[in-house]
Structures are given as structure tokens and as C-alpha cells.
Image (tube, rainbow, N blue to C red; front, side, top):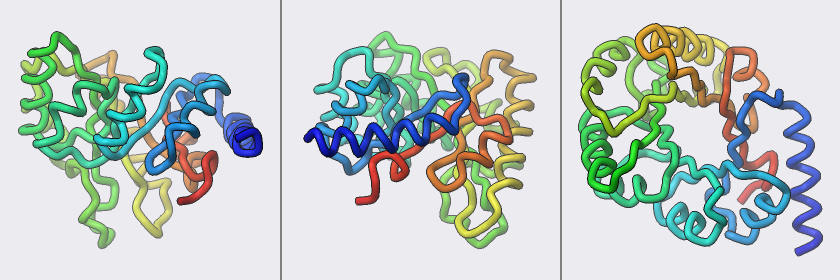
Length: 219
């Protein structure tokens, strides 16, 4: 355990040295054991990212209550009730029907669910299976979310296109963030950048970066 702790500590410090203090580091702990998350907590980390509901349920139950949990996987209607029960932030909202269900469930448990709108950044690049709303539908999507009082839109999220320069996608995300802020001035967050491209995301205003393999290794 001490060897693993030192391995994580060194990698974590390496990443944190490249990130400005005002940026939130979300350590992506998907597929890694609870023991790794406990090490991260002991090292001072509080923001953890999960892609699967079952892992999020397990780890959020075991970790101390001041841990902050980010769900960033594809939303499935049947999993929304459970996800809302443990996730402080949902990064992957891209369907109005899901927004309505999140709102309904959050209302039923007396919660305001914080969400990021996921935008597809690879349209036209041959990777159209990526989740997210099309940028051209952004304004209409905001209209569809009006009146959902138990959802708080905090910002936008995007994943850079596979095998392509991430800069154009992150620039687009930044522009959509400005558009969102013109309508909802408090929605200033940009969730962008992972282990392979976070320095580029930071150039385009990322406020939340999601790092897994650079800190915990590969599985």
C-alpha cells in the first residue's frame, strides 16, 4: 500500500504542477479500487469522477461526506434515479427527456442537481457516435430546459475528437460557454481536457479537467 501511495502521490503532484490553482482537478477513478480513492482523499483530493453508476454508488458511500462526485458517463434513463442520489455534478446532460427526469427525481428528494451540458465536438469528423448535443442545437436545447427548477446548469462539457487536433473543438466549447453565460451569467464552468489534451483545454478556458491515467495509470 505504501508503494502504491507513493506512486499516486508523485503522479498527482506532477499533474497538479501543470494546473493553475483556479482550475478544479477531477481525478477519474473509474475501474480503480476504493483503496486508490482513499489514498487520493488522504493526499487532499476531494473531486472524483465516475463513468458507471454502480461504481459511483459504492465509492461515494465509503468515502467521507465532503467528497465531491462527478458523473461523466453516458446517461441512461433507468440509471438516473440512482445517479441523482449520489452525484454532486452530472457532466453529460444531452437529452431534454433526461433533463426532465433528473428534475423530477431531484425535486422528489429535495435536491438541486448541478449539470453540465455535453456538446458533441466531433461532428463531421467521422466520430459521430460520441455523445453530446450538436452545437447547432445548443440554443434550442437551452429553451427546452427552461422551467426545470431542480436543475442548475453550471456550464458546458466536451470531449475532444479522437485522432484530431483538440484545439478547434475546445475553442468551439469556449464560444458556447460565452453564449451560455449571456443567458445564464452564473454558468461559467467548462469541463474539458483529459490526460492527453488538458494543456490545450486550459488554453481555451477549461475550469474543470478530468484526469485519470496520468495519475492512476492504465487498467
